[in-house]
Each structure stands twice: as structure tokens, then as C-alpha cells.
Amino acid sequence: MKGLIIAVKKHYEDIEKDLNELKILCENIDIEVENIITQNKEKPDKTYYIGSGKISEIKDFTKAYDTDIVVFYNNISNSQKRNIEKEIKTEIIDRNEVILEIFRKNARTKDSKLKVELAQLQYELPKLIGKGKDMSNTGAGIGTLGPGETKLETDRRRIYDRINFLKKQIKEVDKNHETSSKKRENGDYPLISIVGYTSAGKSTFLKNISKDEKIYTSENLFSTLSPSLRKVSFPCGFTGIFSDTVGFIKNLPKNLFDSFKSTLKEVIKSDLIVHIVDISDEVYEKKIKAVNSILEEIEVKNIPLLLVFNKIDKISEEKLNEMKILYPNAFFISSIKENSTREFLLKLESNLDIIEDISIEKIKINFKDMWKLYEFSDKYGILEEKDEFNYSIKRLVAKNYILNSLKKKLEE
Image: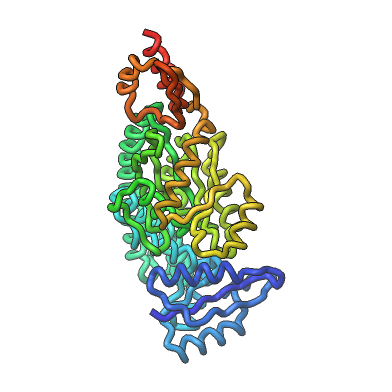
């Protein structure tokens, strides 16, 4: 499908990177962008949003290159959209609709399908309402319906009914998820949420640290829409539950944010957040800010966060060294390399006590009491151990109540 991107900006605005991102978004729904037309305009035109002169330029381009669809970078009103479509005789969609369609294509679970459909219907509804107003203004006299208004009323009623149905279904699904989450709360294993801008490599990261080949990974944007949980064994023997979340993006459409808010809010239940960043991305700083902004919006507070720069195989050694100086507390990995993800787990296991209810402690155990450890199996990890005479000194990592139970058991 041939596409054209239109953007209106103030003269001082630099939106080149944002337009490149929109182009990639379009490619994810099979729109091949052939050109990008921008206009510097301090105040949008009420009728067309863009200037009337640009309308002619767009019309000429779409006709000459047989353009199938025009994608607006800006959020234009429904009436402005209809006015432009009448002039250029080509379908118009905006950035929000592109993202909605990507979500629809990638929805694989019942939960995500329901939430995407709800977001799409809520986005479409104002268009029908606006359309009805336009038609009623040009319609018939008192006591009669405007042209086509009966069908619009029927369509609106059906959409309202469907929205109410979807909300009930989503509420039920979220209730079931909440029950499952409560069962995990205060469990033996810490919950570690993986967050990041879309296409940062979160799913590949989870796939490699969990060694689960069934985890779906893709170069496409928003390939993960539902949380994916996996048990991960640290080299020390300790176990954590890692959760892959929906990818974040700057200016996520409000309808999608609202629909997926319960999914995003799963992060609040985390003991630790791992923020994956594509180090090879030129605008990685903006994307870090975008992710932090969403975390603030869903009210993530007092949860330790680790910054993990991924895809170090795509940058030079010089650039990597510069980044290590800029971010001395960050982790640097290539999630496609097994030794890199193992190194990450080795570093992380020695710092797990940043989690509030996890401690790292040295414990002296008599050899004859070693069997007492087996009861706790993967609920603790051995970071270091040293044998002396008839006892062993072990440096353990575990949840506080596990360590307390273990020490009590050893005293028996």
C-alpha cells in the first residue's frame, strides 16, 4: 500500500526523528511511505489543519503517484479529516490509527484482543457523532431525520452496546488476572518486570535468560501485548519470576493507554524493574524519558529500577566505553548472546538485596545439618561458600522470611 505522511509543525520544532518513527510504524501495517510533506505553521487552519496551498500539493502528489493512503502526524479533528478527504479523494488516517492497527494485528490473547477492540471503538465513536452532527445541520425539517441519520443512530447504538459488552468482558478478565497476581504476592520468588520502549529487545532478553524457545519474538513493533511470565534460575540457584510487558511508546493513544492501563499497572506489583534500552538508537535518551513518563503516569513508586542497555553488538567499542562512563550504574548486554545474558544474571544476583524484602547474609552451617537446606530448594541462592573443619560458611541470597526460617531450622 502506497502512503504519504503529512506533518504540520512550528518553525522551531525538530520532528525529523518522530517522523522517522512514524514511517517505521507505517511499515508495520504494510504502508510503504513514498514521501513526507511538512509545513511550518504557527496556528492550524480551522478547515483543513494545513494551509489550503498544501492541499493542492498533496492532491497533485497523490494523483501522480497513485497514493492509497495519507497518514497525518498531527491529531486532526474529524471535520478537518473529512474536508481534506473531499479535496484529495484519498483516505486519511492519523498516527493514533496506525498504532491502533499495529496493536490489532499483534493481539494474540483474548485479553489483548478485547482491549484493542475497545480502544478502536472508542476512537471511532466520536467520528460517527461528528458525522451525524454535520448531516443533521444540512438535513430535513422539524420532526424528520437528516439524510442517512437513521443508519448513523443504529451504528452508534451498536457501538455503545459493544463497548459496554467489552468493558464487562475486560473487567472479568482483569479480575481473574488480579486473583492470579494475589496468589503470587508475598511468594517465595521476587517479581521482576521488564519494561522498555517498543522494539528495545525485551522479549528476546526474556527468551534468553529463561531459555524458553516458545517465547514469541519479532522485529515488529508491539509484538508483546500481554504480560509473559517465566521462572528464571540465577547461576547461584536462586529463582526469580521475570515478566515481559507491553512495549511503551511516546504519545501512546489515550484510548489504548486507558484500555491497557490494567496491563501496564501490573508493573506496580513488581519487586524490581528492569528497563531495557536499545543502545544503538540515536534517540535513546528521549525514549528513556518516554518510558519514565509512562511509569510516572501509572504511579510506579518506590520500586528499584535497573537501567539495562541492550544491543551492544551494534555499536563500536569506543561508543560503549563512553556510555559506561555516562551511566556507571547501568548494565550493558547483547540479549542475542547467551554469555552476555548470563553475565547480567551473575551481576544481578549479587545486587538482589536492592529489593526491599531480600537480603544477602553469611550463614555458618554444620556439615551434619546440611540436609536442612534441601527443604528450601530454589528459594535461596549460594553466592559464595567456604568449608572449614566440620562446618561450611555460605553467603546466601533469599527473601527475608526464607532466611529467618532457615536460621530457625538450623537452630533446632
